[in-house]
Length: 123
Image (cartoon, rainbow, N blue to C red; front, side, top):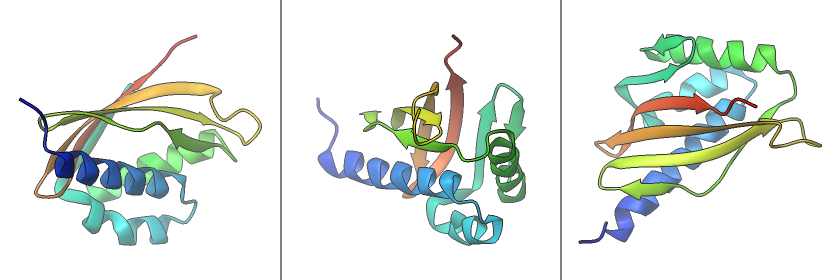
């Protein structure tokens, strides 16, 4: 049994939009995109806790960007398995785009991202 190609295309498009949000330094511009990318109950779970609504996710992005000025996410193509996705990424400045490496495990519901579990590779 194979995963329909359109599911993979939708998931990849959503992840591309997700990382464009996470790379956007403007909190208001980011927030304006949330409803088209994330379900109303979207959450991000990372090492520091769980951001469980749009305001909390936007604050989390502010924190991450504030801790790493000038860094951007560089995602790889996704892996998809019947409703569960995985994307590996690098995070760093332009001259070291993979300074920090990690992986998100994500779900999609109703055509939008519904969760993201963040794993950061430790050196």
